[in-house]
Length: 168
Image 1 (cartoon, helix red, strand yellow):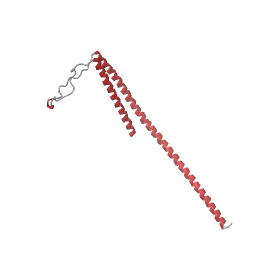
Image 2: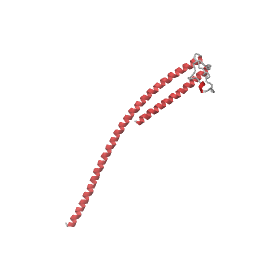
Image 3: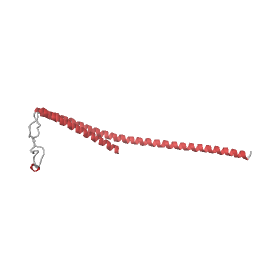
Image 4: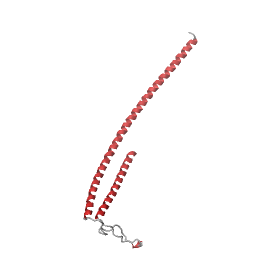
């Protein structure tokens, strides 16, 4: 074997070793990359499960609190409806009466110095009585208005509770 043959065989072996080494390093790197990927995915799953459990606990607490508020509101609405029916019945029967407000003692053209020191609603019993059916209808309209205001207040409370949850 000549020196040229030995050199050629040496170059071929060196090239084979380099290719084998490169493939080995690449395979080892791919295994390490896959192991890192799998570890990151597992950690992400654990974090997601932990976050989901915490969110479920918070949601459950909020739902419980809102259910209690709804139950209390329903009970108050039923009590209020019963009281309204009773008040309307008393007004229609003539037991209770609503009165129109009496004319204001202060005239619109009076000077500021001529006005009384204290104002406010007049005492009960002033002014003419309203028709019983109209009084009952008026009580119903006022009750409807109050229900709308209460529902709006509950919607605002729920919105604020949800917004407070989202800021946590």
